Image (cartoon, rainbow, N blue to C red):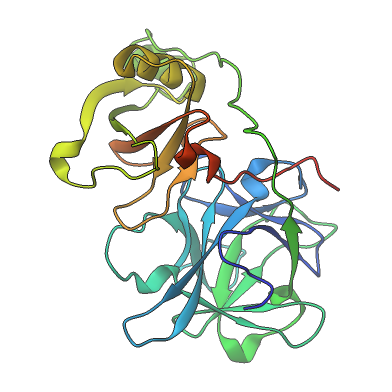
Length: 282
């Protein structure tokens, strides 16, 4: 676990393929991608001690805050083992997001709570298959080997993506007619953190409003009006027991009906404690 200090940002690179573990834009899938500068390649370390006093590694996406998980669903055709996905940390202890680190050399193996190992799929020549799965420990080989690349922190908040073109006013049948996905409609539940970074975790501590689309830029505008503050940083909470993640990407396109946002006033003591990955660092 020495390669995974708590709250450190890291990349995981397949030793066999040279590609990186990416949180897909839908907030659900996990895949391999060569882009190391994308925030989707950054994962935040969450060291977690179980009820049995065993230390586990949890990894949540720096893009969406959702946790790296595995389940018992067979992987899609062409991939080996079982599905790996992003999910919320919504119960006090979630076995599917718990991992342990095995370090046999200049790489690590990540063993899931189920005993299976995290596995890259595909090949250098045939890269159409970019899936990530878990497979039986006894099947371990080159595709289970991962290189941990620490990401240095950014001294400043990197900011949000700019505006995006979304068909917000188009009826659903129009989107389908022209082959476009209709924009998601979700409930934004939000509150402003105290100066020290604490916030009200009870159900009555949240306000809410409906929001259409995936633009974090537009979401920030909506919150500016409702919070009556201009300079603030949005953090997403992906499940009641998840750690807060500063928002650095657009909203995931395929997740749920609710999104929880905690706003930190810029330059407050709580905001000063937030950490961001420097994705441009070599």
